[in-house]
Length: 210
Image (cartoon, rainbow, N blue to C red; front, side, top):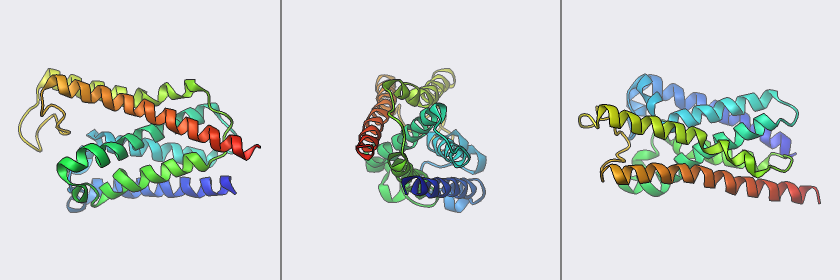
């Protein structure tokens, strides 16, 4: 039963990712609802990239019918990415820009629905016990994205006002030291999310085998 639910959730995640991406790339009015750009420019956002990553891994999961160490690692990494988006929007950017604005249009899919379903799918899927080492690659995408984001700011500067700024997340509103601390904090958040879901997944699967 759990595998059937997981299979269905993976299908829904793939469809949601494709729908959200289609809206963002083709419908300017529906996508321009806060922390979004126009058309293909949306691919600069961590949210969009991590949701695409999550959708791709969900799609791969539909065709892998046996346990796979590599897929388990990628699944945890993709979950960490979308949950960082979910938590940052909920706890940090939402209070700044307004939750209503950040849950409109395609943002409703990428900021809320897909991350929640990805978390449910991870927890419901039967897996062998996940070792701690699986959590290490989980924060690599966040670390890589943040490094490129900060490098662009250091090389090219903040740039003009919105929407032409390079600091489209506003992390340097309080200066570089605070911006770097935010980056470190988000990277640690990705790692923490992977630790929490690894622990919960192991607990649920241990109970199933009792």
